[in-house]
Every structure is written in structure tokens, then in C-alpha cells.
Amino acid sequence: MSGYIFIKEYMTGLGVDLIRYFVFAGAPFLLLYVIFRSRLVRFKIQQKFPEDKHMVREISYSLLSMLIFNLVAVSLFVLARHGYTRVYTDIHAHSMVYFVFSIIAFIVAHDTYFYWSHRFMHLRKVYPYVHLIHHKSFNPTPWATFSFHPIEAVMQVLILPIMVFAIPLHPLAILAWSMFQLLLNVGGHTGYELFRSGFTRRIHTRWSNTATHHNMHHRYVTSNFGLYFNIWDQIMGTNHDKYHEEFEAAIARRKEAAV
Ligand SMILES: [Zn+2]
Ligand SMILES: [Zn+2]
Image 1: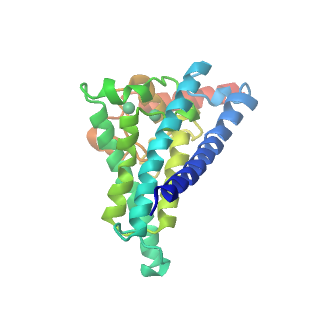
Image 2: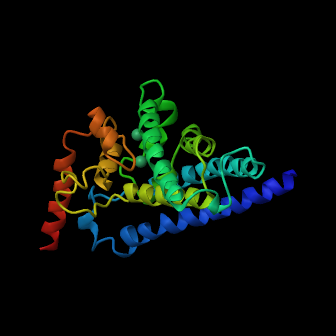
Image 3: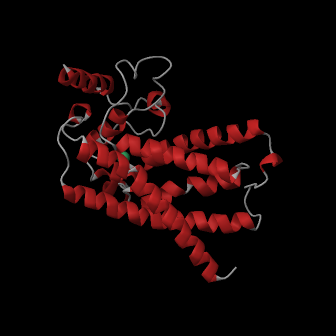
């Protein structure tokens, strides 16, 4: 395979990534921060809006991260084409039950990988050199979704090679995970709480994270490390003491403003 084809595939992949980022982070930004800004402010977790310079930084680092993500993804794509990974293209090579299982396994593995790599990045000796960039967003917006230092971007994307070498994955399963992580990441950074009262305590919903959870992580830094699920934070006792309280306060504010 020539370098020309690699560059062509890289540029195509990058184009897709950019469109996805600007559509899926741009749509909530346009709705929540521009068009319905004053009408929906009651849903906002932190009542203030960040200055433009913070959003410029969030977008700039997200663009840099996408250059890195795409380099890894296209390299894996080449390896997969030559049969070096466990990616399978014939969907009938495994059952549909396995196909669904592989997506769930990917999401659960990513959640675990994220929690522990995130804890690692919060170690005193690592934090200022790697993760601080993401935490410069004290009051994050949807643009902060991929706002990482390049070293963190490499750490974040490592889950992809781990998974394509670990278990058989169909490209559609990878796409499903990729869309899931994008939507959940954008959701966690919108700065708006949309769930209902009791969500963080009810037995059938308390395992899920909320926008308040990640927003508090950006504000308080030393708690709330989880990604999709609130399982590792519960097991390790790293939920913020006031998590439920702040979640309910955001809901109460919303209700008061609606009266
Ligand atoms: Zn974040
Ligand atoms: Zn963090």
C-alpha cells in the first residue's frame, strides 16, 4: 500500500471525524448556547456561560485530538485489511447475538479503561503534564468533548487497538461504539441536566452517569471519574459527597424557573 493511499484514507477519515464533531457538538451548542440560551438557562448546571476564549481552546484541542485519533484508526484499518486484527467483515462469521454482545462488551471495557486511565491521569505527577488541558474547561461546553493534551488523546484512543486485538469486532460494531461514545461524551459536556429527580438514586437508573456528574468532575477535579456508568465510582467510593444533592439542586432550580 502506497503512502498516497494512506494519506487519502487519512484525509477521508479526518473529514468524517470533523463532520461528526461539528454536527454532534455543534447542534447542542447552537440550541443550548445560542438559539434557546435564555429560555433554557434554567436547565444549566452552572448558571454562568463560559467566555469565548474557552470554547476556542476546546475546539483547537479537539481538532488536534482528531488528527491523532484518526492516525490510529486508519493504521488499524490497514492492519485489519491485512488480517492482523480480529476485525471480521462478513457479518455472518459470528451470530447476531455475538454482534450485539460485542458492542456491549466494547462499551463496558471502555468504561473500565476510561475510569482507571482517568485515575492515572489524576496522579499528582501526571496531572499537570497531561490532563490539565481537559480541566481548563471549568465550565465545559459540548466543544470540550475531545479537548485533550496530545498525550491524553493517545491514551484515550488506545482502547481501540486494545479491543480490535482482543475480541472479534465487525466494523458496524466499532461504528456503533464510536457513535455511542461521541453522543455520551457530548452529553456529559453540555453543562445541562436533563434527567428527572431521583435518577441518581433509583435502583434501575443509578448505574448511569449524568451531565451533573461530569460537570462536577470539571469543577471539583478530585471526584466523579467515571465515563458512561456510575459503577466504578460507587465501587471505589469516588463519587463526590454532594453528587445527589447537586443533582437534585439542578432539578429544583429548573422547576422553580418553570413556575
Ligand atoms: Zn470532561
Ligand atoms: Zn479528569
